[in-house]
Length: 342
Image (cartoon, rainbow, N blue to C red; front, side, top):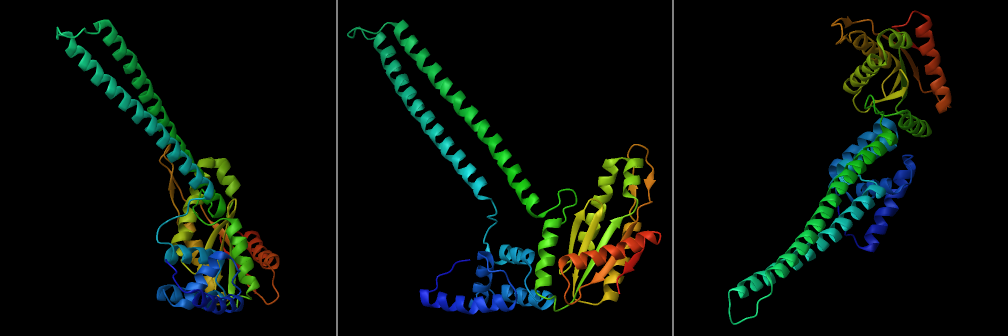
């Protein structure tokens, strides 16, 4: 996305964008400035439509969705590398360039030595010229061959080291991204994202309504003790996959922590949120995992659900507390059920 407005036009766009951001409770950061600057310029109708839909649903544009819209509409390519990774790659390229220049210089020198040696060998058969001794020619070729072999060996070592460093940088970049927003095991957004999104929605007053579903895998510790932690991790992966498939935008599914998950549900009503929770409960109950060692199928997986709705005056903590209380009622009532806060 390129911006080529005149200073006066750019100023006018910014004057229009800032009140829109304030009115929609959008945090004033550079990413959101770019989104709403582009919005008022009407350059990308698809972006305008997406922003309008998001604001209608949430009453604001949650940070998570802002980042997704920015990547989808304003980035021409995936330029998500961190500054540290970019700097590391530049240093590697610079180092390899220096090594390549040195190797090329040595190759040129060796070519010159070869030419001179061939000339000297030709002179051996010429009776009019006092030739160099063959021993001297061979010694010169040997020394220069050893030198270029050493240069080539060092250059190859540099390339090998660079490949290893690049792989390390890629892994570090992936880890940084995951640590920032994703739970590594399930691929869902993590608690950090959940807290940020919930706080922003509550600050906006959740004008379209907001519901929260807390999910706890039943008897998970006992399951781990019986089948092992690897099988326990597989259960969490299955639940995470299920939530990603069933809770599409504008729903926000996250791994809340340990064996707990959560879903933020904007809009709708309590009955619809409870219906969603019960549908997820049945899906979890239908999970079947086969043990490779014995071939037996584990079918004793279930989860308990607590549902609550946002009330005027709620804070993040009060909303979570009510969802937690509803969840505990479901667990105390026998588990594998949905309880809602009225």
